[in-house]
Image (cartoon, rainbow, N blue to C red):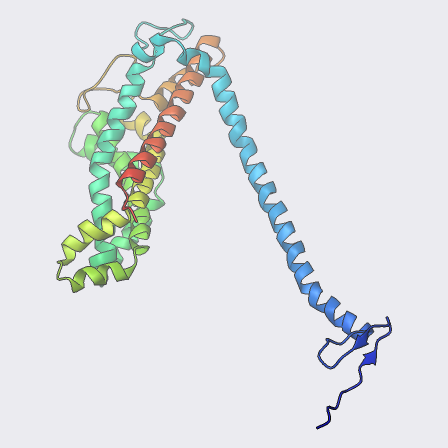
Length: 321
């Protein structure tokens, strides 16, 4: 038996091409170059996208860092004084130094707590209904009303509560009336964020629970809500952070007072936003300007602490895999 071999071709660079070797020469090099071009194009586009992304991030961080630095540099020295955390502004005039912000801190926390106490159950249960039970016209109407509330300005919510609470029922302005107006602003945020988190829960978890004979309400409480717990807490904190910095409802429904006021249903109540607005009128005075910056920095710290607390609660309260 004889073996037949196919002679190889000698390429231009002196390398012999056998029957199993890839083609070489100018046409082959052009083909390889064309194959490399898409890869180079993707690499270039990826580099440009990274540059644009980081540039946009840097541009967005400039005003944020600028604001934080301005507030911290002008108000940090007041926060270092123990009186700031224990006293109030009673008998302190605009041109007087000293005084504290405890009355405003307490008022902000009390109003935010009452707002959360009312908003969280309503918002979470509404989201559960829309995702797990809602069908037909009622669900569409509720979803439409939530969308409407999401776009309502804070001053409109305050005027609505004023018309109902003060004008119609004749009840005096108070911290509770402020909380009612803040509820209208917080509920849409909780509903939409909770709704999105519930939709992210895999249907396989629900089906597995139903297959074991677990009732639907137990599945929602023990499986769905626990799985989406971290995202729900984040949405609640976003809504709470929004309402804590609102000013219009406070000016219309709960004017500022320099004294301690812990009763939501009796008289004016001090808060950090209204304390900032109170000193804004005398901003030319160094003492008033310092208190304004100090109150602003205190509000930023409170919001930051709430977010950190929410992350801790979400971390330890979420379902472990």
